[in-house]
Image (cartoon, rainbow, N blue to C red; front, side, top):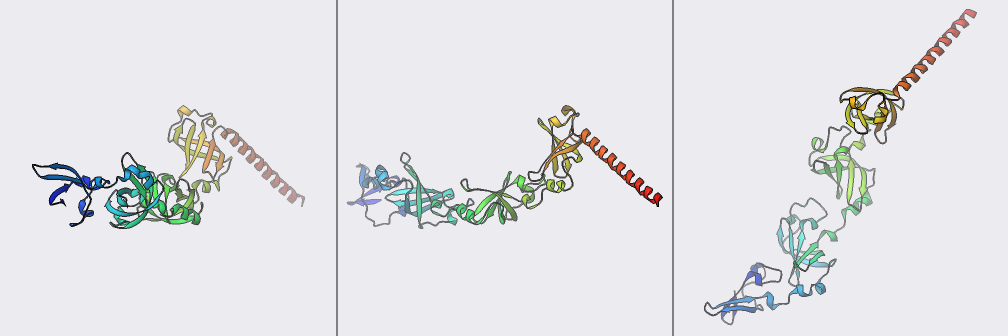
Length: 341
């Protein structure tokens, strides 16, 4: 209520500021003098309606000369909500600082953990909505980017220790220094039955290798299994191109059949390499014998050919026959030498 020449007038809370409806107790104290404009007077009820905001210039009518996108301004925290913070910019202007614009840390649980009512902060104007009379600002845009600090300290191939911050259906996020990286399920273990949910808990410390850094996108890819030799690499120590192997059918695709040679060691038999077997007659769980036609530990890929099996078995049989003949001749020569003596 405002005393105007002995008559009490009412300033509705929607008529206090150009910001919109506000709590008058946050702006005025009893005894303050204010400029007002009379809106209406009811003689019978002796009711006087007043406006404070209409007695002052509307900043939105000349907003372009007051503030612009990209400007850095000093603001005062006026209200804190779980979803963000309202800040006073002066000039009867208020802006909204969304919780996602407070910090580069993606795990901000509540703005009150970072800011307090009445605190002065520098913010950057990121949006001006003239039609909606709304301003949006960012605090994090004025803070050092964690990714810049990260790339100056770490490189692809580095082995680091991080803390699991969250676990999703597709992997786990691990905080390494000032940033978070993604440990995808397929990078958790060489054992395909294991994933982030089965192997990790939030808060776990985990050793990982950095396998990709995308500075522009702000993304980091991590791997736990890269710290161990792949099963294919171990398998390749005792097998090579031309080795005859037997595997169990795990899956069928249009382009071929996947067989399991050992635990966590699979191979592909392309459709054209299945002959004389018929693709339609092959079933899961069936054992198939073939020849390794390609083995690459660096890409963890093995290809097997059934078509080459007969030729390879013939080649090995001939090699064994030649070896047996060589051994026989050597033994005969030895006996001949003895008889001569």
